[in-house]
Amino acid sequence: MQSSNNTMSRRMFLKAASLPLAATAGVGLLASSGTFASQAIEGARGQAKIAKVEAFAVPRAIYAKITDDAGNVGWGECGHDGSKLVVGVVQEYLAKLLIGEDVFNTEPLWANQFHEVDEIGRGGAATQAMAGIDCALWDLRGKLLGLPVYKLIGGKFREKFPLYGSFSRSKGRGEYRSPKECAEKAEELMSEGFKAIKLRLGIREENQDPFDDPARACTKAVRDVIGDKVPLYIDANNGYSPARAIQIGKMLIEEFNVEVFEEPVAQYHYQSLAKVSEALPMFIACGEHEYTKWQFRDLILKGKANLLNPDVSKMAGITEGKKVAALAEAFDVPISVHNARPTLLTAAHFHFIVSCQGAHRTQEHPGNRRLSELWKYFENKIEVKDGWGQVTEEPGLGLIVNEKAVRRDAM
Image (cartoon, rainbow, N blue to C red; front, side):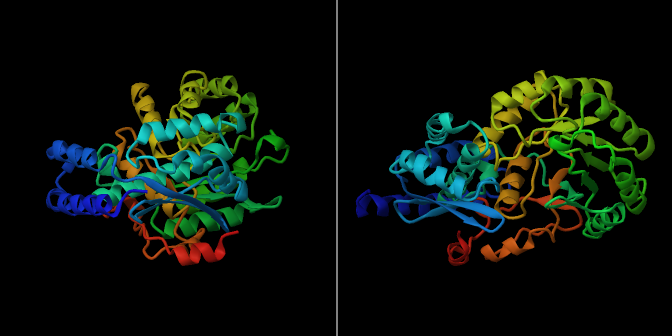
């Protein structure tokens, strides 16, 4: 823990730094005042130390909190599967690596965590836990410097971006929506103003190539209600063999003008995915089940995916996400994020999207109604209007957490 004199010195520095930073906000600070921004980060480096690392599993979400030695806090969202398991990874493996470390030591902090959890799995719970910490650290850095995260990770390629509304045929517990119910969900999302619709078929690997295939009936019902001009995407949720995926893909193109076919085969069968991608004149999207830059490398080179769906809550945060974005740019593959949660994950994705040149396509959003109960954990809200997303100019990720509510509901 630093002395009170050092803490006061840092606070005075940040206060002084915020004046010229605020004066340049809105005019591309990193482009026009990049030298000053760099000096500001260097001035804070070695001053802000991580004092506390926490994680909270609430119903339908997992949040991470980082506190520095002056009491400043940052929040991030972990991947939503695993609840107490993900919290356990944070508490038992990662927290001990972070206490006392420099908040701005971005790459070493990420690498030290990644190599610590390699024997419990470089994916799934491990990277979901890292994701919350990484995003919380970016939130904290932005707050310390008085800057939105996108200005720290590359700047802004676009002021706003179109969103597609996404829903699943699956209701959970083996129950599924009828074609009529799928049409009703699509109509609901259209009423919220989304610019495209994605239907997730919910077939899954364990029910590969189902005899009573829902693809045609459900796709037709959705297309009938949204009209011919609205882009329609279909997510098979890993449910087909390559031969069947090619048959279904051709049907989706010819009969319903489907533009994107997501995860048509099991995510671990890159050779099968390549067969589908090479056979179909449409976007073949994958990436929500890839957790590292190395897996995305193989997804591009071996799986031949031509649209990437990274999810920063699964793939260890924004730090790794930016490396995947560079990889995508090098191979000329566009990005459309996988975004299944409306609060801190959406906030992180919005900063990521505007900072990535290749994220120029329609991006995923779960809709304003789905999981709206999670907003009770926040003092402010991300407003999605008329199907467009826009990043906040507030410091950090831009959301204010109702910590009392989070602690109350933490499991």
